[in-house]
Amino acid sequence: MTRRIFTLSEVSQHKTKLDSWLIIHGRVLDVTKFLEEHPGGEEVLMEVSGKDATKEFEEIGHSKAAKKLLLKYQVGYLQGYPIEDDNDDDEVIMDDSTSSFKEESKTKEMEAFVINNNDQYTSKIATFLEFFLPLAASLSYLGYRYFAGELSK
Image 1 (cartoon, one colour):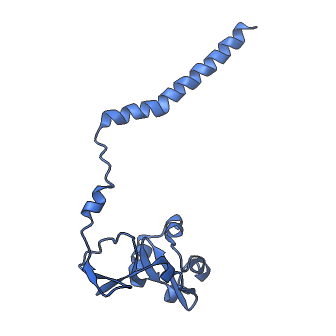
Image 2 (image 1 turned 120 degrees about the vertical axis):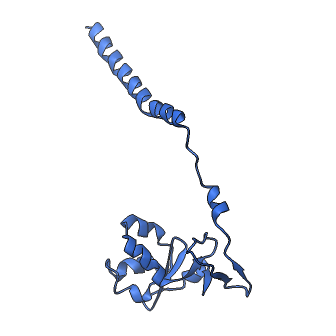
Image 3 (image 1 turned 45 degrees about the vertical axis):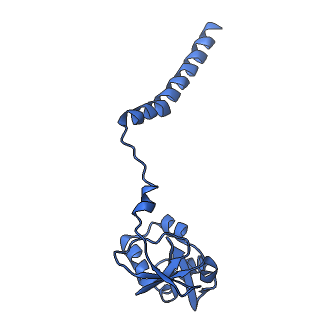
């Protein structure tokens, strides 16, 4: 099985009720057959048809079953989007060329996004500075205003 790579302009050409595609998390989905079955109605899908619908998909809070259903309607990937590992070694085929290449391991790519937060001492200092310091400053100001008002009477 091969994976096709689509550009955003190619996906944007599929925005009718007879041919409706959208993008969620870099996956290009042909949702034409799903329009009538969608629990929110076909209008919801038609609003984002031909576009990246990732934000809208996540804002609704879809179930795990709905997220698995994405794979059923997937026809390819968006060009330039990191391809998630689906636990297989499929080839990726570029639309504008005949050459194909194997999907690279994503471990190096993910290492750039790992934040190592093992320093508990720094975390406690940050908590103190973010919460207790403004609280102390506010109480000091209110105390000053109270006693300054009492002394002027």
